Length: 382
Ligand code: SAH
Ligand code: TMP
Image (cartoon, rainbow, N blue to C red):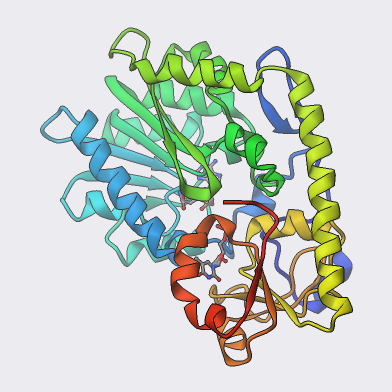
């Protein structure tokens, strides 16, 4: 597999980086993860392609997340909140607007620069125990450490848990959300697996890592974002009451077999079937002479296109609204990525919905395509 966000120009084709995307499940700590992990510096740098604000629903989601965190957990008069992976400031802006002391930790310089426009303070570095010490020296301990779609990106979770243990006040909380293993297994949404997603967490697996650092899971909240996510709330052992939702989620996971290896054998078979169905569908479209375009050059599409060996013989181009991706080619499959106007100016017969996790937003926006008889092709039911 190539890097999921490694969109590239033709002169870079010969030097493209590939690694083995091989997931595994550990029967001891109940963690689902990829074995070979590309160096984070290859993925997160000054031309990182993912900007959180590209979805207006996500902007609203982060506003709600911030308001809920403030209402539920802020006890001090002058709270200090730290976000890991703050990207373009989409979450912290909500704290900055209220004059709340905040700090974003974001190693990708280009997205961090965007955050400045929203008055968000950012340190352009990777979060780890050494940085936690520097933050404490300068700002003191944090009331809340927040994260979204980043904890699962960090190979060395021990270093993060150690850093959180240092940085958090006695009554502080760590809140993070990531794509949820239960949803991936249920939907066969194997496209959640790519270089940046080192882990696909479950409540069982996050408990097992953070308990080693005296942190206790006190609440879980399922989210519809990113195709099914879970928000986890941790506090220092015994410092806050534990919601009944935690025990319920653990029971659900055991009922789904998320703690058992055969579940993942079945998942593999389901992935293979999903691949056969998609390739068959696209071949049929081609056989009747239809033009098929990919809708949104998502990170997830990199896994799908390369796992299914689909190239520009089946998909004419991929339409995407992110300027940094336009004019480049998709990782590995080398399908051209074109501006959104190329889609609207000359509708294809069918669009393959790579951004299936943003389906609601996209269906609302694309009524004209649908009304003109445009077909939506999908490989994950939502
Ligand atoms: N929180 C945002 C962005 C998620 S993308 C959202 O949910 O939309 C993941 C982000 O985490 C990227 O911007 C990446 O640069 C950043 N990141 C990756 N590793 C990190 C680390 N070790 N510490 C802090 N941020 C990291
Ligand atoms: P992601 O799935 O990796 O989060 O990336 C989402 C991509 O989808 C991002 O490149 C922007 C693109 N996109 C569109 O092109 N049109 C849309 O309407 C939406 C919601 C996203």
